[in-house]
Length: 154
View 1 (tube, rainbow, N blue to C red):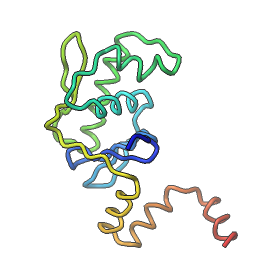
View 2 (view 1 turned 60 degrees about the vertical axis):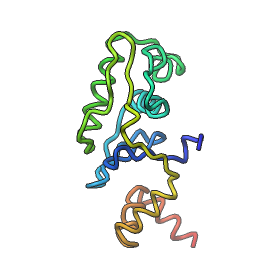
View 3 (view 1 turned 45 degrees about the horizontal axis):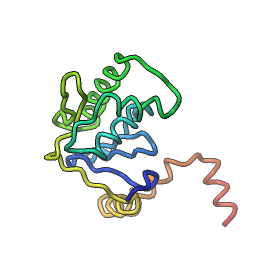
């Protein structure tokens, strides 16, 4: 799958990463943690190159430069630091981002990362939470006005 708009990454069977929404979701509690867009871009690159060292330059490009921004090295280091904290807050029990001093970062290829279609995630949620819980979770994501419009259309 190469369309980031339709995928979710299951990391270490502990959290889901939804790149298009900049979210980390705990598999245990279902609690959502929103990341900064730049942190999400960096995490997505690290996941896509799991098992390989990702250079500072590549992370700068993915996080900022490809989007018309230039930042200092401190910004990149702070972003990786905050990302590690957010992964931990979302329920990851170990630090999966390894530092390669003065070169870059990586995610070990020993960390299980499964790429799933959003439909597969919905199926899993439906099985785990039942129809009532699944509907509650889905409909809580939509504004009440939108749901009222849908109901009137019906």
